[in-house]
Amino acid sequence: MPYYVTTPIYYVNAEPHLGHAYTTIAADVLARHMRQRGEEVFFLTGTDEHGEPVAQAAERQGLEPRDLADKNAQRFRDLTEILNATNDFFIRTSDPEHEAEVQRVLQQVYDNGYVYEGTYEGWYCPRCADFKTDAELVDGNKCPIHLIELEREKEDNYFFKLSAFQEQLEQLYADRPDFVGPGVRYNEALSFIKGGLNDVSLTRARLRWGVTVPWDESQVFYVWFDALLNYYTALSYAREGEDLTDRFWPASVHLIGKDILKFHTVFWPAILMAAGIEVPRRVYVHGYLLMGEHKMSKSLGNVIDPFRIIELYGVDALRYYLLREVGFGQDGSVSPEGFETRYDTELANEYGNLVSRTANMIGRYCGGVVPEADTSSPLAADFDSARERLCAQIDAVELSAALDTIWQLVRRLNQYLQDEQPWKLVKDEAQAGRVPAILYAVAEGLRVVSLLLHPFMPDKTATVLAALGQDSFGLDAARFGAVGGGAEVGEIAPLFPRIESPTPA
Ligand code: ME8
Image (spheres, rainbow, N blue to C red):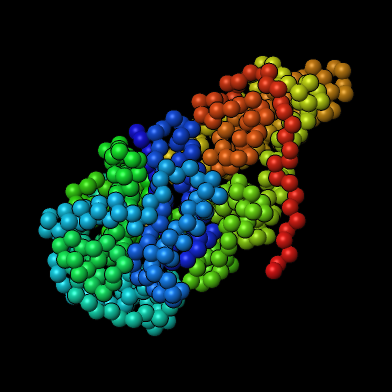
């Protein structure tokens, strides 16, 4: 079945930070892994450009919303590229094709009888582009996420009859326990629904920066409906002259952070039902990257710049660190110190050293060629069961668990070398004959583990695989013993060289 994975589309009201990089990296790991399995994959990311958050940020900077959007959309595109993300398309909600498709779908919702005129009054957070209930406010009348004072807003606009989907949504959750993952987020979404759904405002009367409402051109659509629809509209124009909707819809998985759970697990399926479109297969919700105890966020100003880390340490180290340090699905703290520790102890000492020791020994003891040997190594069973486990973990979007499965193999190989000590055996005439089989097993293990690791660290693993004579990345080849000896092992420069940590500015 084709695999369609998405990230949220990011607001262009500010520059990208590490939190945005996190979701894009995770989605890229899924996309790359599924391609390794031979699936047909479509991977979408992009930018959310309409609404108050962007209009207000532009005003603060003395810019037109479109100019701010152009500037920051380019920064998000740059991020996608520097992260080595293999997205098939980058959507901008200011694309005219997207706008036309939003109008078409929401007109359908209107024609189906799920829209009415009303007056809205409530606490509105312009940064969230969302109304808050009294129960959600903190410190009097502050937004619980952005900690800014909120104002009460009142306006006449059009409402979406979310309440009409109470039963259908409950049924969806009953029928599909994996609609939302992990389980704790499924429960959160379901209890929100069971708490009783109120209708929501679908349009804004005061704002100009948005998609015009086709049945009342004095209004624009509320940015969240315009934004959510990106996942669907992109397929209609991502590839010139081709409509990919039938092939890839419904999406396999929408990856999101927990800040936008309600929109994706409640509003999104409801609006699709109202338009008569199939709902996605799954929404997977990851946790927050924290700085100390606080969510890393542009409004709190405690953000880490991913461009800077990549410039210093390379993109693969960052990709690895984020998925290793923070259990995917949970919140977790990140820090420069934590990053450096994992860089030194795991990337340089465990994987990097394994690679250079293996290449050196094959150079010195085997004339630089992976020895031909019996493929029935004691390592084979561990590697093959790990591959199965990894695929199941990726299917369940358990990315940190998947990375741990791989890392146990890296450790298994280091342990094997430590136990066998081929550098001692070569000096003992009675034992030296065992060395080729040992080095074959390590080289073969390294080849398999590098294939499994490829989606997480595409550049470094490609270097290792090329040195081992493996130039394709399909998972079919990731079986221990699938390749015999004979590969000429080239020179491999240290994969993770020591980096002097920069002095704080
Ligand atoms: O919400 N930890 O855009 P946004 C982990 N435009 N992930 C984080 C993070 C953190 N500290 N900070 C940001 C929007 N993210 C809307 C989405 S989708 C139809 C519209 C990631 O720029 C995470 O994926 O505020 C989060 O959900 C997203 O960035 C929010 O990005």
